Image (cartoon, rainbow, N blue to C red; front, side, top):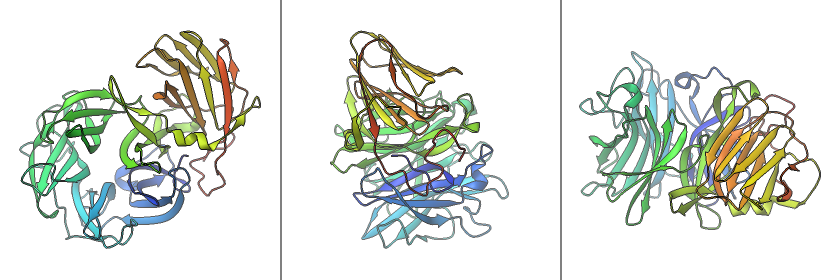
Length: 431
């Protein structure tokens, strides 16, 4: 259900499919004082046949030779089919003489995420200072590569970037480059400059209605947003957030039932306290990419139903709570310290320490699904993800229905006997 490498936290990732699915992911030590430029020095690898249970397989790629453009850290990657094997665009970071980010290229004759060989000794793409910030405050990372995205070019790459001249808190944009051979890239002006974000991370391109859908993570809002356009070069029409704050770094994959799924990361909290600041966390379970009248949204993944036990009145930890709403107001208490409320379209979750999150559903909900996995709680209104939070307190407690709505509690039955100490939290021990 949730995954982090043994003893570590997980950040941006890529997933190869179909089954058996292979996960490549950034990893680093579990610590609140996290410096990604020095701690994310390798990619972990894991395997799954169902996107539920993950088997750790160890490191798959690491930093380059001393003095190279990627000798400090390797960040977000995009592996994709190339010939009979794979190519991978990846982010390299060097701190000498000044912090720099660049896009490198690696190839493999295999399709299992192993056997990588760097192409050349340097980056294949760097930001062009005519359009993109370089030096202090530079961003040129998180590559996403597609074939035939821009007419006249074999390959098109998007990156997380910053404009050359705007203030840092408004300079977040998408970088654009094209190539005929993956080794030589022509840099183009940004096709998307929102003008109100400091970073636009992990861009993902998806064919959509004869054009393109772009998903990306926005900072500092910490949510996934969407845009649509007829051409990669734009103009891009904003569709707004597709999920509440919390889910980050989206990736798309075809699921076991051939549905289009979004995988993403979720944060934890420093000190394992509700009032602690967010920090790096783990991979969450998939969501269905749903179309709604207000644009694409993350939706409930029906395959989770296969993991549920019978309805129970016993105290529960990992569970799904189904609530059929009899009116426009509802109140459910769970885990002894959390309260989920509905008032018209407003849905909120709170603990004694703080209101953790509140949002408005796309319509007055007639039903809720509340998913509890470890410290993470998700609330779905009419099967659309509406709230996502991490909360620390008693792990198992009865679920109490305060407003008389119909309620069913079913325990999640999945294998948690794995060497994955960062991913499973039981309320009584720190990772």
